[in-house]
Length: 282
Length: 272
Image 1 (cartoon, each protein chain N blue to C red):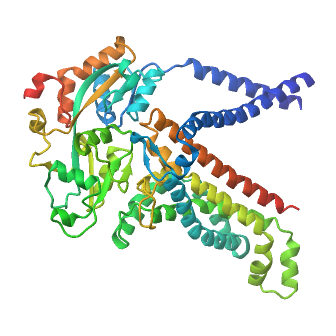
Image 2 (image 1 turned 180 degrees about the vertical axis):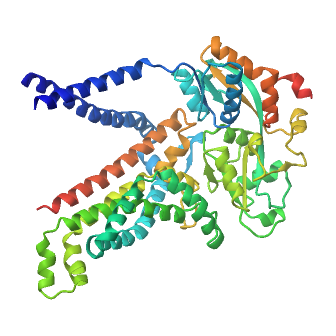
Image 3 (image 1 turned 30 degrees about the vertical axis):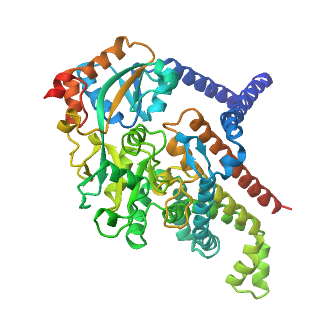
């Protein structure tokens, strides 16, 4: 009997290890394909070059790095206030009967495929921007708007969890000292859950930087440094997504190299988020 | 405890059986993969082919010319669809021209401009002409729509129209003919280019120096923006691959392609 259980244990260990192995292999492969090109054209020309014309051997991704952060920053500008308001409402102010409906609805927001968000943005937002604000419509603004909706579930669920994890004595104590409900929320609960909320925002940022499909559809993908929210832009992810179909040789390696940059950005963000949410415990 | 571990053993066995079943059941049929420009035509003819050859299965996938050629080289696809000339070591493959395709410069249907010269189009796409006013239309900035680097349609456009000039970096980039058409159809100030066969009433194909892009002008060589569509094989095709290729080159199939807006490779049909 014991022997049988050992075997099962080992098999499950093997399955668990295989998923990690696959992750390691993917990482290895991205680096193995991308590093030679970065070395060939030089890290500086790659990271800070402003021109991306693969057919002429120019592989500068600086405009895409800037665009990635620009689109993400726009999404956070809209997503953080909305997400925080939603979190406070959900965890403190909501009548339970509505909560039963609202919470699954927000989780559903995370389950909607990104191509649907992109399609909605393309059909609804892009013509609106084109008609009322000018420009091609396919723009940083459209991308940021759509992304701000896409990162809401991440921000809301994680910051609500961190609010819920607070000891009930915090709120009780604040109320006992004569604070109103709102004062207790704003002065005591939110500051106490701060690290969790910041972590949720950083994870949302990671989600925004990594989004591809919806962005291909609504950013317009021009390979130029955007100098207005109404201009078209291309992010790191969409650069890979839009060009991989036909890329070969150096061009293909340059896309893998773009993936390496993305890899480091996402790793940095996730490490920061883990670090921040750990600190809360101490 | 015992029942539990027995159940999980059964569960594991089941998973293993399913896994091996998955491996053994290789799909009977043929995969055609590659250029998104060729894909819709290959899909159409694959359906036609299956109706003539019941029991065959043909899977048509997009992904792009290069992806299609790589799929053929790695033998994950039987036939690669390619909408650009072969380059470098790709030339060792066995390639057959199955049709020719014209590239149309497209505008929004409500754009009053009907006709531009190749030089004007080049200046528009290189960013020298930036406003419709310079082409005799009300003051609106021109919005360029192009295909992504590496696309066969873009390469053909570069070769036929741009020459040594670069397409402006401000151009919007879309990753398929359909997406370019969608963007042009939804914005009056745009100009783009797609396969002539995919032009519909959402957009307007531009005359070039007075020459309308139609079959007659393509056949007599007056409309010059024409490129080959290739089928690519690892070696000379045999069996099912051969019969599919032969079907593609048959008068019946070529007539269908002609109806869809492509240029036939059969001289007899071309003359009609």
